[in-house]
Length: 291
Image (cartoon, rainbow, N blue to C red; front, side):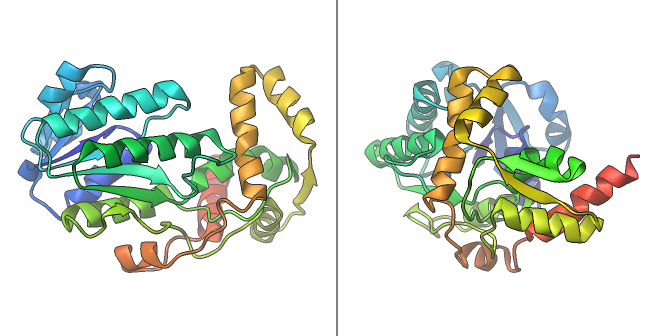
């Protein structure tokens, strides 16, 4: 029995879908905060149980009988994030799982300029201390994040963001394929994987150029001072802590923390990962189709 947490989220749902192409449904279980949102999986024979990273008793039930547990990292940062991950790790250990897998991130280091990467490093420490074999999937930075940062600028013709550096933007779909492949081939990696990345590291200057080629319009890239960008975020309602965390992404990119290009993802999924050009083509075609 392979248990996947967060199976109604953007990454977790895709991982379960890909697992079901490799394994019988009765060998797959999911742990979710709201089982009603996972009804489609239950209807296909997947074991669905309520589990929250803040409820040890609930996790014990959700993880019961697990041979492997995939902990999909929570969508938050800081001490609370690491506490929740530790509770999930403890739950997997208590359930007797042979292996724990975790969705980490490339650049996971204690001295990273991005809080989430520091959280991933702390979680990997907890995995090492658990005494159970583990695999930490060092996922590339989500391409969806690049789209969120750049969408307004592509529409207006001017991408205004802080100074950045090259990032290997990688899709949820490709990372889900990789996670399913690793789960189905237990023990393929011990400890952190190599960076699971797309084939190119791109800056927002590059993204502006690609968007311009696709749309046939001029899309320029303007650098906003960090302080100005922070004030803008706070003016839009973001708490100061959140604004600082988002700025950390750009600081880490400038330091080259997300620039590695590695062939491991392509080897795992058996094809070249989706490019940012393909992602932008799909996004912009969808946007135009909705008008």
